Length: 227
Image (cartoon, rainbow, N blue to C red):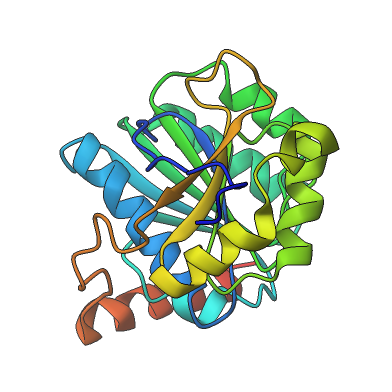
């Protein structure tokens, strides 16, 4: 990197029981999400449950519903969220909860924070606005403008300016690694920037088999008909 650029360190903190958000393009976001879930799976030795909360009509439905979940809640109204959260807080933990379709309300964070061993993973094409997230992961093809505005709001313009993001992102894109803002383990909650390997933890086979996929779709269809 250029001499006026801070050399980023690799991210090495645990994601277990954290609140993280994954941002990326339609092409790279699925692999990023799978790898983050796989990292947490490894940390918890594949114990507990994996739960999907997905907003009805979410653009991520096509690939998320193909992944293997212990429970899926399609969110159409506030009651669906309450029912889902009741399941999450009463099921076997540690729990990995993926939230797709906008950000959860601040009240959801406050509710989940009362319980141990629940990892919340948000997903979207654009960065989150709420400050409750402890880390934000970007795929390497994310535009400078998208990252810069988020980093400035989290870290402040003066601190963020020291990273020379334009130069950093050139290195990120050339190396095809990802960029992360994180306040996990930081003494200053403004956080720091790190690089991460987007393929870390990925097993290359996080999808259902055809039989399992058919079972998932059948359950979703039954839940719709039953309403």
